[in-house]
Length: 119
Length: 160
Image 1: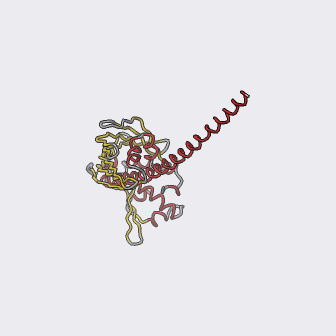
Image 2: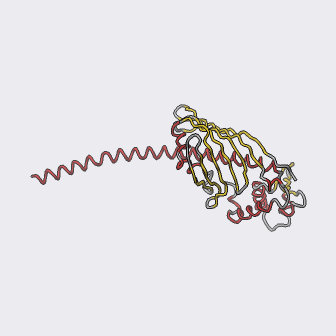
Image 3: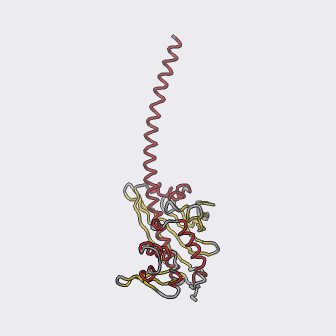
């Protein structure tokens, strides 16, 4: 596809024509090529035209949009991390309460044993 | 041939979290916490090689695909106000190529029982000389990377 595009712009249909791939697979490959900055595409009406290679500036702009996406995902994951932390803290507190009540019973048993031995 | 160029942008992201401002701040301060949420997806990883969370301190990390994190990130902390603000510079490199330099401001405000985060990224993005050439030869490396990428990931999982 890149070889074909290096000879000039082409529509998605023209690119898919000679290939033994489904149109959906071609579109997905084109998406990857576009995300990697190898090609760029533009839709006019119902036809998406692909052409080779962005300029240096477009590469720089693509990098900026990648950084934005990266930080957006990070902030989502930060939110997930904070809620998980909150749940874990609550679980720990419950466990502590449970643990606190256990030694008291054991202590009682222990003293009973002692008392029995004394008897 | 294109001239080397630089693009500038200011990115502002706002979020509200159901967590106290102190807990939100701690998620940035604690390197273990940061390592957990900083990888943007399960397929990516961030590995801290150095960390020094204080004004003038430096973090060095590698991030990118799990098992092969190719980006080198150097952070310098410029200003830290506990529970309120973190300002740092961030340089991202790939191989010998510097991709971008940013000034990142993390602003934390109390908001009811939670906290609001305002993240401002002022970024200067460099094109990288081999890409700026914009010719077929320049795409060699990118195409090789792409080939590796396509081999590693099935077609239907490209979109995360």
